[in-house]
Length: 355
Ligand SMILES: NC(=O)c1ccc[n+]([C@@H]2O[C@H](COP(=O)([O-])OP(=O)(O)OC[C@H]3O[C@@H](n4cnc5c(N)ncnc54)[C@H](O)[C@@H]3O)[C@@H](O)[C@H]2O)c1
Image 1 (cartoon, rainbow, N blue to C red):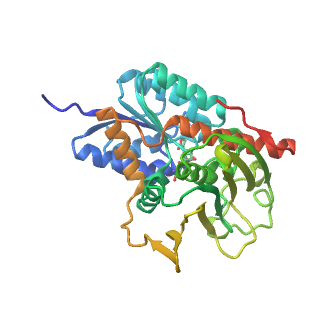
Image 2 (cartoon, rainbow, N blue to C red):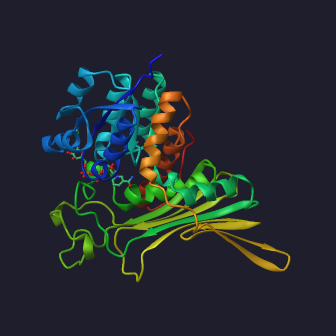
Image 3 (cartoon, rainbow, N blue to C red):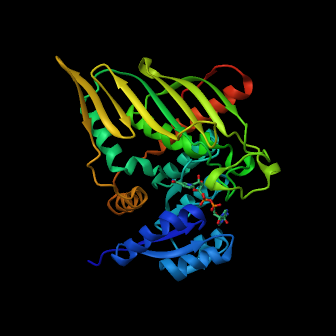
């Protein structure tokens, strides 16, 4: 019997799609595994670029028209955050499986709506948390799953840029993105850290977010430059939180687009009573009777995590396998993010209601 090619469409052909989504779909098409059928962007030239340079068959400016014209097996959503939920719901209701860029949604209510729609239509939904497909992080996860850390009690995730406020797109506008670095880059590290911890239920958080730089005329944004009108900037540029998780585990979250520090920090640490892990460089730190031990993973070949993630999702759809980034996990990440924003706004600890 002839192998059925999965029909794939992409909605949103901006920065991330052009950098890391289009080429993997083109590659899967050249391998005969998918038909890269539709590409849609409100800006026509962007949709057309997917056709001219990456082998998509048809360009659209209206995604509803795209979903009406053909029955898609996979829709890849790469719009800014505001579009994630409404487009995912329409795509799932049209019968497609959906991979959506991070964060899953603007808030918990939207994420729940997406998950319910996926379930009602018996379709797959996965957030594009590409960091879970980094070879070194896969290795660290397998060490944790093998019990090498012993009893895990705490973790911290810190992703700090000295100067790195996104100057393109709509990252700086709350109505489009919900927030700043917490929901933009913090979401990667909260997801990764929670994956290492095996996704314990979040119980409560105390958080504080600040807007210190993004709307200031006197700020040098380093090599990132400024691509937006300063008065539009209405999100945070720094976030800090302490999160209580079930099983007595705690997690510190710190992230920013700008801060007066010497070096960027890009680090997750998970501590257990037998060993701990750190991500950058990736290592496992333990002890024996007479020595402190250190296992490094610098030798692991790098792999293109977005490429691996897209190939993984296509394989899950083709073979009906469970996705690595389960939507219920993304919901927990979103619960933590929502609670940090709420805690900051209300100046108190927020108890996270179980879902
Ligand atoms: N995983 C990663 O490493 C990573 C990196 C960057 C961005 N992202 C995520 O990707 C998403 C997009 O970010 P970006 O940097 O590509 O933004 P962008 O602004 O460069 O691109 C978004 C595109 O979506 C299009 N669009 C918006 N609404 C649409 C609609 N209704 N129909 C069709 N097209 C629509 C816009 O015209 C634009 O071209 C965000 O959610 C962001 O968080 C992820």
